[in-house]
Length: 293
Ligand code: 13P
Image 1 (spheres, rainbow, N blue to C red):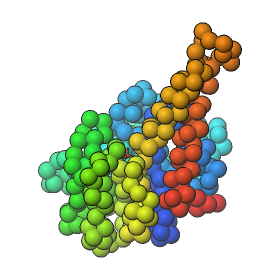
Image 2 (image 1 turned 90 degrees about the vertical axis):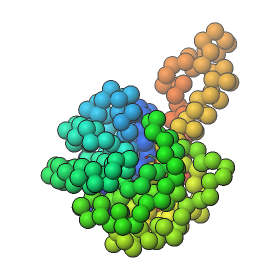
Image 3 (image 1 turned 120 degrees about the vertical axis):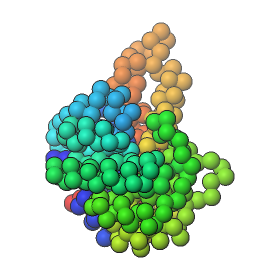
Image 4 (image 1 turned 180 degrees about the vertical axis):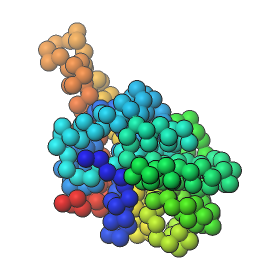
């Protein structure tokens, strides 16, 4: 059964580990992540951006697929289906579609409008039992065509948004979506400390989990980051494994290969296994293994 992320993230915060949000793009991604979370006895959050939702045919398709797969694969660890960086309309659509959690990203709006829309969405989400993440201060990099610099959130603004009743908060501390540039100066742990103090111990969310050195991830978890979002990392390993398979001629229908390696179930398997290995590595790094016994 799908659950919201409130309890799993409170437990992570109290237990000084983090739950991974792994973004999904299709059936293979979903299956690979669910099976790995189950194997590792780890709670997990499946993130769906607006773009990925559209790509998969719409939020209703995604919710139906995830619910059915969770059931048919016999998954028993807590699984949350979460909208990633939603606008107001996407949040409404995901509440309607049966997601168990939403993120309203009002960080590019004037602060007063972010407050007003977050207030409304907190009520709508909680009425239906969903958890809700909000964002203060844009997170750097490019995702779904939206680009921002690696901003650091203002603790006073964070406190105001948390007071609206959100369940967890994405607060920029110099993190960036996608691949980090060589001149990136690292996470701002002083800012994290101030935000954690100002927000009274609410679980915080670290976006842009790809490419942050392991020691900084561990320090961020110590500082109160209880949810870590990973997307690009899985895309990179999936692409590399698929390219290697094709480069080895395994998908070639004209060669000596009689294995029908062009069958999508074979063609996509190396990428599938690569995602599983990456998710396992992250679960161990975040320390969420064996937390869903
Ligand atoms: P990466 O693509 O950098 O891993 O970031 C994912 C993310 O933060 C999704 O919101």
